Length: 247
Ligand code: PGA
Picture: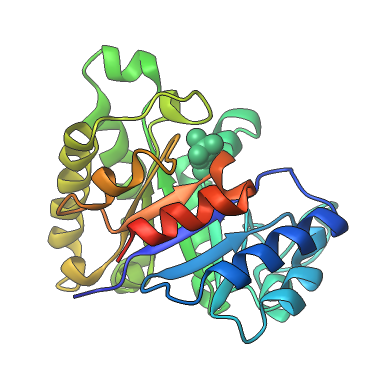
């Protein structure tokens, strides 16, 4: 059976002192983890966290990557730079990037391509807003978002991780029910099956208010292969409970 992945998304949180305390608590509690575990940290902390997770089995991730390789792009961070600091994963197309930074489906697809070219696994986020869900457009939206990434990345698509994050569930305490989430994951899986023979071994994570109380039920659904965890990844006890619920 494939191992699930529990990835923490710290967003714009942390400090050198807080990061060290959190990682030490995670490392101390993680001994028996049977799933893959990663933390996606703000770029300035990559070097620090690279040191803290070395040899622990926890993988390092970034939260965004430039769609350009190098050059006059002030403020941006390239995939090669992330790789140099040991990033194994990179979030791509998180809804906060799409919403506040105008990232289009095409830009997200190129970012995934840059990550792959640098040997980093992009965790490609897709998800509908509340208005889109209420208008019955959930499947159309997530399929459109994933189609752009499939189109640009061709046969490499089997190397990505997908994260389904309904926008209305992020940071709100509202979670998609396990059945609602499973339904969308199955839609995404069949879209991947049409693109690659490897679809069944690919990971599709659920994200959006996953916590210690709801993780086990979500993670037991057929097509949910892990979690992308925001708020609850900042508290060691909560994140460890979610890891313990995974397999
Ligand atoms: P949340 O965030 O767990 O705080 O809802 C998830 C995410 O945005 O990745």
